[in-house]
Length: 435
Image (tube, rainbow, N blue to C red; front, side, top):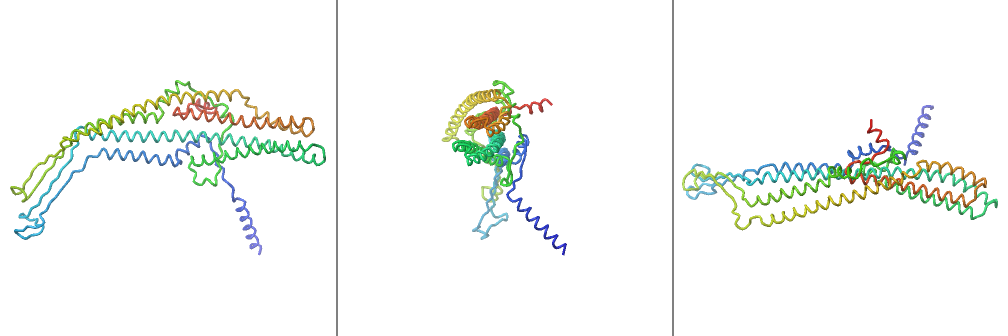
């Protein structure tokens, strides 16, 4: 009997435990370095793009193959003299021909070269996809972190303010304070709650983007929590001059390399179109048992097109036009890149100077002062006007500081994106590099 009740007890406890876990989400904590590693191995866009590179490799292999030889055979269907059907004997007629197409004027090598350029372009496109998505990942990572910190600040402020509101409402019921004072504090609570809801909305969007970038298929059961510190952001700095970054970007930007490859590819295509004017040669051998002027007739065959009307003029003209267009697009791409990089570098400098001008202990001091302000207000040492002004200032400061820090991170990551590599680093990263 005791065993029975023991089993029932454990069954009930397990059921309650399972119900308590319903709706709970696993917290997936990771650093920016861990996020980048997972992104490279799990992001579905990256995984799909790898197959595009494999497809281009397959196309190159196909272009390197020579044309297959051609074989034709003919057999006499009916011999009226002998009355035989499909006579394969010595008295019947059998023909066959084998031929091989030989590409002249280096067409085969030019086709291989064009396919190789296609492969290189596919590889650069893959690298450019990683460059773009990595920048999005890093920006989203820090945005999620900063917005989470903003919610923490608002929660701390709301905790004390709601207690004060309860005290003031009790005092109002006792006719100790005016109704306007209660409404003023309620207004402060509402404003902070509204800002908190806005921050939570941005966190939700950032969570969705992070899970997609990290390839999390069970995203509904997971919450991503960035491992970072405010010091990581405050100590972020530019490590190179604009000229150094420009020189690096010209070597490392995959999209600029694509422009180079496209011009070279079209130059090769123009050479191929010119080579197409020279006809290819078909060489073969022909045999006929009874179908020629002698028995067992054997001959060598040669064949080629005569470029009398079609000398590939249209394709040559089209290729020349495409080459000139791609040269202009290349010049535009390099010019646009330098202008965008200059603007991005200036934004990064401005945001860094703006954040460096702030006191890093600014919010910590505000938090300490918040508790003192609540106590002084409840003790009537501070009036409602000063109290409300303080909380309005606190709310505004939290939002502005978060916006400045986010702007700094965003501008830095935009510069990294346009540079084609990481050209900014934090104090922690500098320490790791020195080691």
